[in-house]
Image (cartoon, rainbow, N blue to C red; front, side):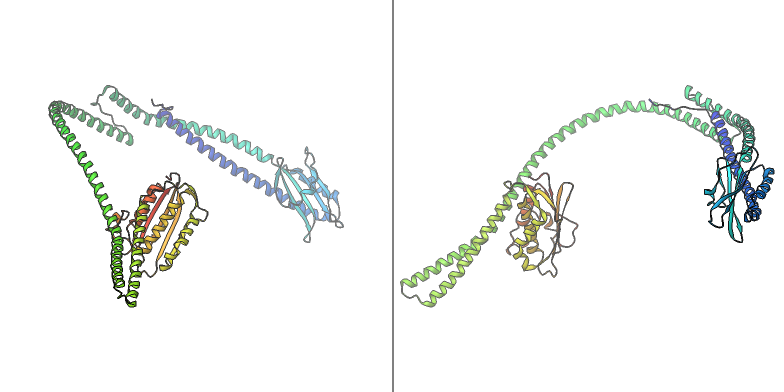
Length: 539
């Protein structure tokens, strides 16, 4: 339910507007003119009083010099003819001690004397108003030397009387102007209000009886004439629209009858189609489950094939070297039993045996490292507890532990991490993630690179630890980017690369730390990895 505020008619609004404008204009003009008149009257009074003060100071030179106060007081009695002057004081300066002392005075009839103003003499020449009176002080000089002062006190009563007369005249003038404005407003009210009332009654009749055949009459006001024309246009269009609606209504009724029959037929067809769709969807679910199982088996087969390939190479070399060692040992035993063993043959056997044992050791050690990497891939780091970790110190420990690998290539490493950044997390997985990323850059990115560089930016934002790892190396090919975190994906097959480094990083971030890691696609030079770890949800 809408709540309407107080309303008014256009007649009253017109009266209010005219009277308000007239009243505000009168108030503003009277206020400004009164202020200007008062200022002019005061300036004129101040000029007259200042003239009297200067004249008195000029005449008092001789009497002050000869210390003739009686003559000066008789002279001051002449100011009885000046109604505005109420009090005059004359002070002289003692030529021996330079002190100001009272000399002579004048008080108008029926005017009480005023106290001595010796403390006010510093404001020489300034007109001040105090207690409804204007006060002016002038110096008495003789040959550019000040010998005394004249204090003149004038009444502002004449200004007040002028103000009272002006207010009475302004009020009478304002009443006359407001009466004329009211008469003019009433005349305009009839000329504007009557056509509006006629148009309003017509619209009320249209709204109440829905009689769209009536038309609004014209008037002698252009705006109202235009409004009446627009109303008539609206009524004509509405009348035609109603006629079209009646025709359309009959057509719609006929169309609805035929549409119901079509809807029934199509409903039956849609029911049959929905049943067929449900059957197809059920078969698609079956095919989807089968495809998922096939993908799992394919991934498992690929991983098993990768493990077999990586482990088979060092074990095969170890078996070959041990078989060769066994054959060499048989030859030496045969020569020893036949007593044909020579020192040269024994020396060659020792050299070949040492080479074969070294080959067997390297390949068995390689196989052991691969098995350890496979174990790392499957480990989820559940056993490690959450502790307070200083990221800056942790990165420093990683650099120290990898000093031997870093000295071979000597890349420039820039670490941007606050020294006081502490988090609650697992330090072991974070350390392994940094080691694997740096190792990946050293193995794959910096071959024949003139200026290798690694940038590590660490910061926290919205409850997450974000590690931005960048290098300016050779980068990752577009074909490998979609599979960069898959196991056994490497470009160094047969050259020391197992393809498990970034897969281990993925497992540590997602499983051990509950975060996510991604390869930034917009990085144009080198590689850019973003690691995000939740600080409140570490698994």
